[in-house]
Length: 134
Image 1: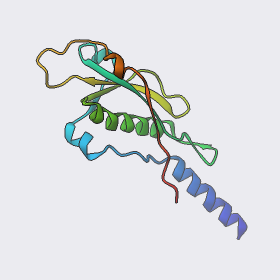
Image 2 (image 1 turned 45 degrees about the vertical axis):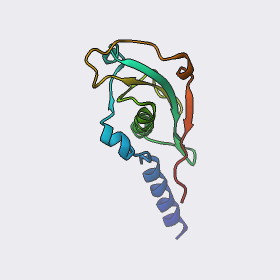
Image 3 (image 1 turned 180 degrees about the vertical axis):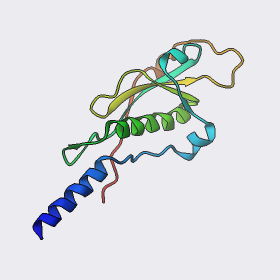
Image 4 (image 1 turned 135 degrees about the horizontal axis):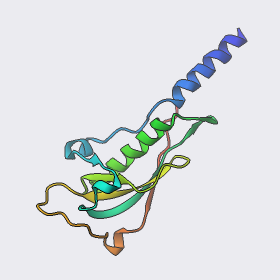
């Protein structure tokens, strides 16, 4: 009977490690925030940068990397709306569940130009994410 419990626990852990936990909020969905690569945002206005983080391990077991990246991207998308942006672009690769994104305004202007963010908004804001606990 103990072996069955161990197998069940390991299976449950494997499923939890492969889950995404961060959803795009309704405001970001209605705003239509998009994700573009850095080479596609050169004509957009940089509004700021955000560093987001999620757990990349569950009980010591690594999560599926694509799920971690998906959660990080969703957090950045959610932050774009708060900053008044419509586009996010990764500035670096995800490392240990942490990634920095640029928040941009690309859509809705006749001639977007590349600008740097105002001095007050260039600081990286860290937004930790903790998975829901049962």
